[in-house]
Amino acid sequence: MPIPFLASVLMDGWPSWLPGPWTLTKAGSALGAIAITKIYASGATCTAERNMHGRVVMITGGTSGIGAATVYELAKRGAQIILLTHHEHNDAFLVDFIDDMRDRTNNQLIYAEQVDLRSLHSVRKFATKWVDNAPPRRLDTIILCGSTLTPPGKARTETPDGVESTWQVNFLSNFHLLGILSPAIRAQPFDRDVRIIIPTCSAYIRSPSLDKALDKKDWSPGKAYARSKMAMMVFGKAYQKHLDAYKRPDELPMNARVFLVDPGYSRTPGMRRWLTRGTVWGLIVYLFLYVFSWLFLKSARMGAQSILWAVMEGSLVRDKGGKVVKECMVVDCARKDVDDEAIAKKLWESSDKLIEEKEKDAAAKRARAKKREMEKEEEKKERERVEEIEALVNTIKKGKQKDKEKPKSGKKAKNGEKTA
Image (tube, rainbow, N blue to C red; front, top):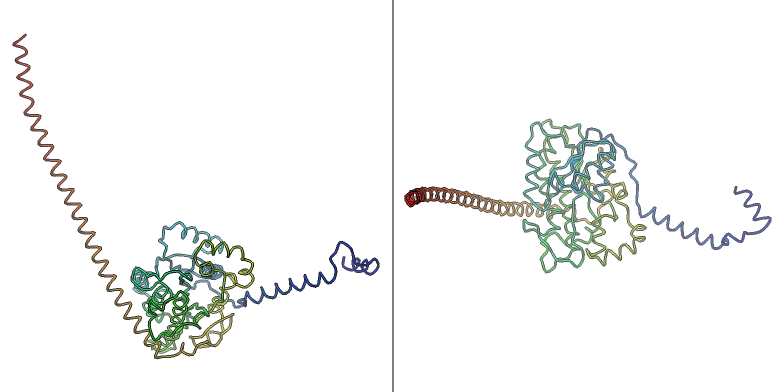
């Protein structure tokens, strides 16, 4: 086909129905530039493979965005997935999501546990139940994809525990979860490759210092998000040292490794919320300019590639934990204070103190609520007893009234007979 066409061009000249060579060159160059940009923006693809059959993977934020793409890829490889989600077990969305994921991956080992990162009590309730198991449950991988953000221009919000939402969901609850699960992680056999994956974001580079709390007057959505990611990176490094300091009963080295993973900017619900500023007009503009999002942002599947690499790459077994992974390779951290032990110690201690304080307050609230419920229940029972007694008294009164009316009717009947 090409040879006859080229011969025709040489013999008869350039066809009139075909655009000129210069036009084709410009169009080809434009398409080539778009293709190169798209390939570059999509990032690296994970080429690592690992037998995931029988391995237990615990993941937060696994029902949307990068988390859902990660769940799909790992479940497809046979991993047992435990979704930590704020949805209740009978939630229609969660039931449909799990059924769909099981069908698509041909893997029935996908379950869900209710863990609301907006509630420290919910985190403790699940984690203590997991730890209080004999023998210790198998746990190969923990992936902390759950996070939130406040769209630009929106007001600061707090969780029911009274903590700023971004700080609690992105950092404090994850800190609490790993703190309680620490015995379960350390109890894993030496020959088990345990990995803790903490997804982060390059926004941590512009985070304010962690030395001071972010005051309400200085608070902004961007600062709050960046600071929460910075805190997770500092904690991730410190948590690796915490695990390494543990002396196993068998005197073998610690086999758990923490990896901080930057998936890159992706087309996820969180990114869409940020770009649209959480408004309808923002969504309309986003849809109108969607071609730019498609071109410059990764898909959720491509965003999950670095996480998958950190989970499955075999060479990471030979290396120490606490490494930063980006584009399917280990990279240097952009900020030196991530390794600052003084900052890490202060963050750890202040977080422990805050959790203790908020859990005490929450426990007191639950106790008061329970007391009110019991009082309401007692009042309800008392009302029922009163109503029952009143009903009995009314029944007795009606009976006596009928007894009084019977003789009168009898006398009237006798008087009637005499009259007749």
